[in-house]
Image (cartoon, rainbow, N blue to C red; front, side, top):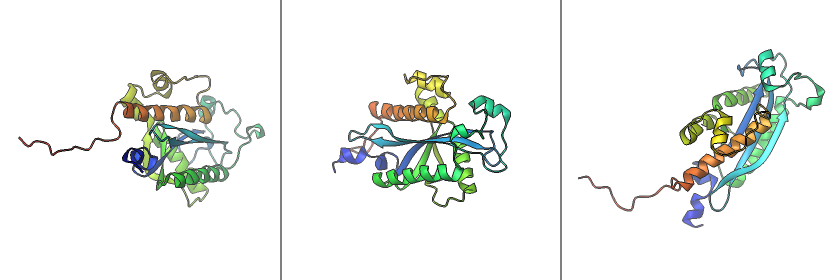
Amino acid sequence: MSQDNQFNTLKSRFRGYFPVVIDVETAGFNSKTDALLEICAVTLQMDEDGWLKPATTIHFHVAPFEGAILHKEALEFNGIRDPFSPLRGAVSEEVALKEIYKQIRKEQKHTDCTRAIMVAHNATFDHSFVMAASERAKLKRNPFHPFATFDTAALSGLAYGQTVLAKACQTAEIPFDNREAHSALYDTERTAELFCKIVNKWKQLGGWPLCTPTEEPSVE
């Protein structure tokens, strides 16, 4: 493998981490007590020239766990009026996460990465709900790093001067329909595009691969 091809891999670009974009819709802000209602994951791939792009999308509506709190304001915000409606086709947290984790591990292995890392907009929120749901479902093979994340709110603030997802996408010239927002599927796909655009922009600007100095800097 040439030196350029070594740089143009997910393993090399993210220090062995396999980035997976996640978005959740919930019935509140407390991951321990409030229901997880929708989750979407988008895996990423890197082409032979080192450009990052979305790969696989996997999406589930999720049934509230037993005893979960459902805040009216949160349901009005995300448009999930009746979390118990059979028309949602919702599955349990366990089923949703098992399927998502299975796909992540499959693609992670293919890229020779050692661990998945979550990419999300205001990532602490999504990470906390995924971790809490994994704990409730007693899933021992959680592929995600227990605390590290890539937060596109912070990254887009640096790259585009915007921290709101819709405004960051608009500034990055990524189409964004506010009528579709607050759906886990839509928001994850837009967040994936945004993350890829930021990473690729850094490459375009010459920030990757890193330059190795050919001589020692002067001490004078």
